[in-house]
Amino acid sequence: MDKQHCYSVLLGGIGGDSHSVGLNILRQALTINGYNVIYCGIHNNLRDIFIMAPLSNVVMISCMDGHAKRYLKEFHDLMLEFHSEGQLWYLGGNPVIDNNGDSEEYFLKIGFSRIFLKFTDIQTVLNILK
Image 1 (cartoon, rainbow, N blue to C red):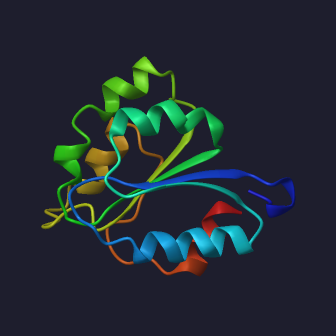
Image 2: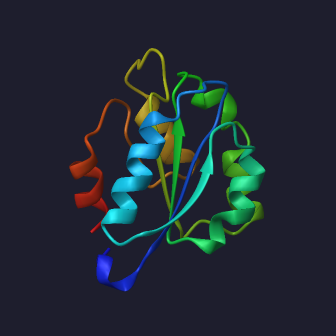
C-alpha cells in the first residue's frame, strides 16, 4: 500500500489481556506514516470488528494473551456473513501460547491474510503494508 493514497487501517485488540502499549505504538507509527487509523482499543467483540471492517483497507487484530483460537471461533462464519473474503485481515501480538507448528496454517485457513505469531518490529509491519 502506498501511503500517498491515505489507506485506512482498522486496529483493535481482542481477548482478556489489557496490554495496549503495543497497539498504541503501532497506531502512532501508522498515523505518522500517512495511514488513516481507526483505533478500537482493546477488549473488542469480534462482531463489532466485522461491522467496522468495511471502513478500512486492512484490519489488524491483536491478541496478547495467547488464546486467539478461542476468541476467533466465529471468525470464518463472520467472514462469510459479512462478505469480507476480499479484505486484508492481519493477526498479531501473541496469538498462541504454544505454537505447535499448525497455528499459522489454522489462522490462514479461517480467513486471515497474514499472521504474526511473535514479536514483529514496526518497520517490518510498515514494509508489509506498502
